[in-house]
Image 1 (spheres, rainbow, N blue to C red):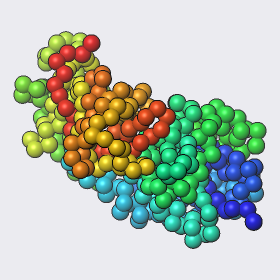
Image 2 (image 1 turned 180 degrees about the horizontal axis):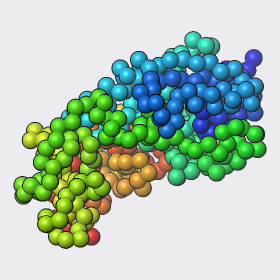
Image 3 (image 1 turned 180 degrees about the vertical axis):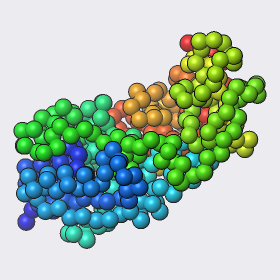
Image 4 (image 1 turned 90 degrees about the vertical axis):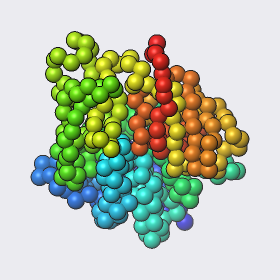
Length: 367
């Protein structure tokens, strides 16, 4: 009897090809479409209804059954409330990391097991290596699509039951497989934006849930150069949309967000992309999660990413507490944002990650 795998079918080409590949490999494949967000926009860029119709067409093309499930409440309770709480604190959260842990590899897995699944599968570009010490998470072979950064919080129990059929393939190869199989979404545009919510006018979307609190924009020496609409609408390193007029600072030199003073409701800015105020040689992070157990030793050489798509950065990892690490980077890092994930690697293998608490300064000058 063939092992049953439930594929999370989203309507996109990646999950469709994952289902195709597992079918060709001889698995007993069934599909599941998850509804995780109630539409509040009459004209969203890509509604869940459109996604469902496409998932249904893919399942019909492949001759596979399609189950549906509603995880709207789970998403709100486990992901979206955290997302809002972090913005209230003036931080920059990464909901995709939590979404993977709580929805795609928790709620989805639990539901799939009730359907008799041995495994679940998704269209993530990452690899799973089965080893004596447990299942290891490795980068996908396509460096432009690798999604291990978003998967570092997925627990061993879920990784052991998961399949990532696309980990050994490039995006170009995946689309070609879809075209050859006649899948209806072979050339469908990739989804972007917040996990399960999609592309939105972010400030407008956020204002539905958090009241804006306008305040002052100041330089580091407390000179007022403008007003902001609310700290939640800005990210560290941002240069667009600050609305700082002429007559302030050096003419022709762009302004950047360097800090949020939540206590005073002040947005702190500085001029020039190479301004030392934008850079840090290190960071401290908490909420540690190690995929295969805590690394041995007080100090170790690693590479790390403080944002998705960033090239690996050489660093030294130092334990400074039971649930706190310090990373000291070889090169200064631009716009280290509290609330974001820092994900830690050795070569192609993802060791785990943590949530950034604060940047460590100063950097006197930037080459």
